[in-house]
Image (cartoon, rainbow, N blue to C red):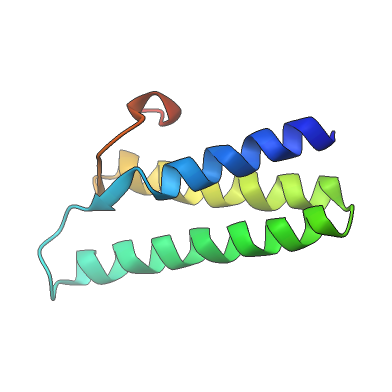
Length: 90
């Protein structure tokens, strides 16, 4: 379980650095995109805390959920993929 948890942690961190907001600044869509990035970063942080505490199931859930937020926002067009296109379901 530990190896899978670390793999999903890397997946989420790679996904976070592989997207950028697609909407113009000062728009509602851009605000939403930034909120999604914030949510993904919160799940990454919490997942790391769980992982360090040995709670791999909880950590895996956080990393998976964080990536799910990003992946859904990419699919909806809120983000442009700048790298690692293969980790998204578009």
